[in-house]
Image (cartoon, rainbow, N blue to C red; front, top):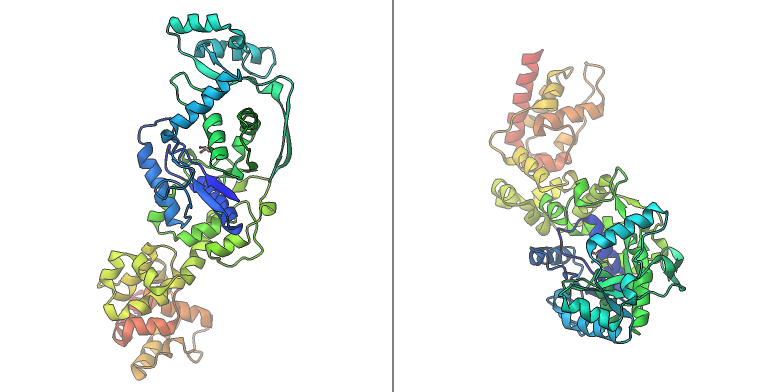
Length: 472
Ligand code: GLU
């Protein structure tokens, strides 16, 4: 099995693009085959170098290592289309020599009028074949006049192109609906249909998995490969990823680029685990390493309807990845600001205390400020909770702490039920947490005790008691 990811470097990759890359990677790995990266940069777009670099960084970050492609090389290189001009020229010449392609001098304007007329009379727009009938002299005459020509591929009128899509099942297209299509633009650059198909064949790609927006390109590409006597790959077209609003996921609909997700603090394994389940079902709902995601990936489990981007799911996998990440890696991930606040001997403790209560490095910073910041002060919800607390529970906790300053289990102990009714055990614990951490929920009490130390616990309980008595 040889699969490939063939992005056009026209912008930063988003989750939809990355899912295509991931599925191709998983298919190749699962079959012990090869995963290729090909940069489709024929448009000579300004800035494409930058985007090609960025997408390679994204792939590396997600650990989707390509076996052949830019930077790694391989037997079928070069792997950037901008460097394959000579290869395309050879195949253009072959098609021209056998009469399967011909120069077309129709201008953009003429083609536009033609399309309009066809649409107006209810016909599907397709090239009329006007230049197909030009004699050698007529071609020469136009060239002599300096007219620019595209190169068109000749499509027979009476063919049926059939193939078995590996996701969508049997496909059938009438060649009469396709019409002769451009394979080389008038500026000499190859058109997508052409170089994309030629490269897949020459690079020995055996399965092309791509977005279903390319489904109708496939019959054209199959006809081309047949004309060039090149082996065609199998095709699998997957439904697009759509936003929560059902519209296609693209930068325009505000979906985030991989770079933005990385900068926000998402872990690569979280994204891999999320994307592998966007439009594909696993039986195993645990966080899986790439090797297991690959072993269990199955084209038969790819969905046929559009996959919706679901942020809650992405966050679920982020929490899972945080749970499994090593302490050292998480510490690094938390970043400089956290490193400055947490004392050296408390690093491991801090990481393992907060890991279940954070999603992003910013959350870790908030906890670092709670535990080690100079200016701890009660705010918002915690403040209200303490002001309105019935009874004198905080005083009793304070007494307890003073009596047993070194008992690490102290805070988790239940107090004997006091005179004030209407407060449950859970609410008492929330009150205590609020006083100590400014938050109703959070890490276990033993860990809180250890990180805060008795002195700070006493100080915070005293402050909370003061606030409570002022309010009542
Ligand atoms: N460069 C094309 C794209 O980014 C590749 C399509 C394909 O995978 O064949 O849409």
